[in-house]
Length: 281
Length: 230
Image 1 (cartoon, each protein chain N blue to C red):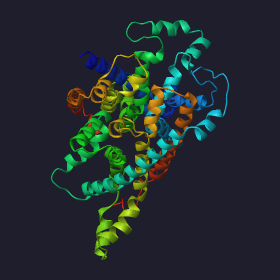
Image 2: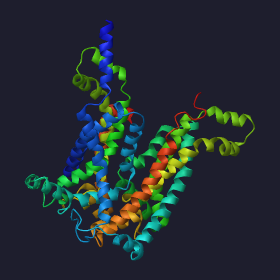
Image 3: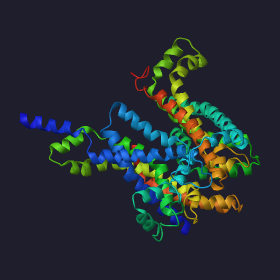
Image 4: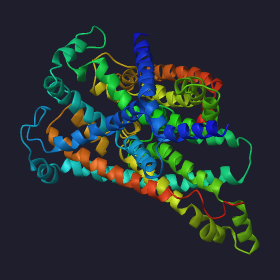
């Protein structure tokens, strides 16, 4: 008996190392996810303007200066993208937090339906959201503007903020708020001193993800932008009618950096939140 | 109808390929990776998920182009005959990978892969270790344990992931526009109808197709317990 158990335990510890086949295929999968992005980096330095020849005939820094100096269209598109993303994130933070608070704190008729409806825009194909918004705009005679893009982006940015904040709310104990109220704080004071510090990192993480999401959104944007060019739209036109291909790579690197930083930031902000204050109820 | 069928088959193919590639990654991340390795895995999956869609498509255009990396690699490995052979296939082939269905499918798989990995990983992490130990104690070989214990329990996760890959492929119009043959997918038709043709009602009618397909799909997924795995 005893020896059987030891043998079984020995088998178990041996089993905690992954089989080679599994390790190899997992590694290959991860590489498959990352290697393509490296080629973007490489081709930004390619001296070959017309084709995607590999290996690149020569390496040059030329395209960075071209993008920097000769292409004001890039900077206009970048500026619009940043403005739209910032505004959509701001809208999403306010509305997403309110919605999350409502769903968390109270039970009301249609609560489940409401939470489903909030999550829906990110689950539906973007083209459906896009068509719906465009039809709505044209029915209401709203001309395309900065704000039509912001509204389009806010539909899915709210989801991200909502999910993050709701997850945090669920880990926050309701007794904290009750205690604050008992001690004589009014609603605003409670929000300012108790709720906000509790959800701050979730809010920031959600906001960063929303920003990243909005910054590289194309599909909803094509339906709500009219003639305006955000950076992804600019990239799309370059993809279809290329002018200076390596310049597109330079812009792609800018996009990668602008989206990766908030994602990493959001990850580090929400990483250690499993033992958050008040969760031990 | 041709268009609907083409889009549906593409979505199904992409979903199956995603499931096959995602499973080992999710399995490794859920069962073997610990501590820092696990965090690294998580970031490695999240970064491509959140990074720019267009940038990723563009990367594949570089890779699949006629004079690009794949052709070069095939040349280096003396496999040009294989590449040419694949491209010569009747339906999936084409003049180059970036103008063949095969290329379109590869890009779809790449772009939606993280959406499959995450639910599968979540499902696998919920499989209690004691179950696999019990199975081993009862004399099952690792392969048997995997087939009869882990796979059925992870299946709702795969279905949950397939909701994403399937629905996203159905609605996408940019990837088939940039990489692939010129025969259109549902999304592209919708775009053309509402944009250049100005026929918004017909475009709206076309969008009903993916909505209907997804409604059926979601009902089936609910039966299989996919929503508990999300």
